[in-house]
Length: 426
Image (cartoon, rainbow, N blue to C red):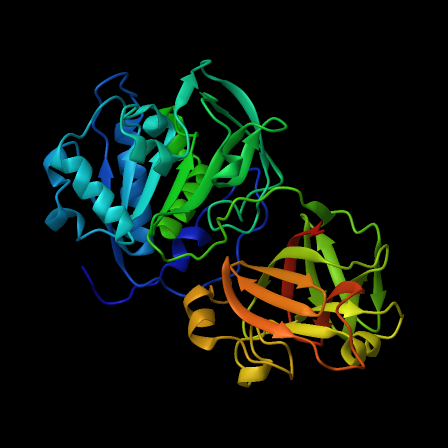
């Protein structure tokens, strides 16, 4: 169902997030959408279900999406599901669908629908392989309510961008049958390496799951509500994210700026695991090591119409013009000419603009770049979608070896960076 646009920033603006970073920059409104909340149980029934339904209704009222809550499985028909951009399995348990309902939901996901699983959604439909793959794993054990410390691995996804690197709360940390790292992108873990919240693209649709949500009190927590909102927005296609599986990366910046150097005027503030640019024109570059073939990933956010870029393949030097003249810049500012806009190899090659526009989150929200450098070949991925494919032919430049850096463009340009990590390739 489509309606007129409504402001969505207020829902996050009113959240006083305990244990979280400062509130997000104001963002633009989502196109309105519709969400189905399904909470049928054929096993253990959580007393938190009513609180969960009300929390999602509250989020929808503030963020501009409608909510239909039901335990009637007859809604799982092609005609009924077509109304919704996302379906939330809220503490479902056991076998809750049958026959044509299973087929209708599979077709819905393959047609681009979104799924959100909350807590015991992973304790559902053990004999339906499609569902198990959609969620990512099934519950293997339920150890009971306890205080847990969640380690946030990705602080750029809409569901986790508001969180500190660690999040202490009370919940029931399920054990799962399989490790989801090979099939999903892990957003948060319990302890050192027990995935607890993750996302994935799946057979044409999108899937988001969190193990949080056991108690009624959970749904009154602003931080958990914000996580639910981000997961729903991702599943509904309103927040873009790179949810490809990821292993083998080394953090170059996760709050510590060891190994980095500033070239030129201005610089970056370093707070809450976030680098934010001021003044310039300068470059914050990783001086500790040159890299050859690699995949570089990082998150970035514009406050508004701001300018910055990511530089690769330049020699060491204290003058930022060294990177400009001898390396390549992948641009961030989305309002410039085609060869100087987000995803462009600045001054050399435009991004695929339709693909870029489809993958780009607006100012106020986090985006992710992956820059893959192999020999003289540079590929740019925005939120998991390839938007540029460039081969260097300039004898004055070379991508075969060099440093990486981020630009502080000048007064008034505020761009922030997080989770800078790199994997060296063979």
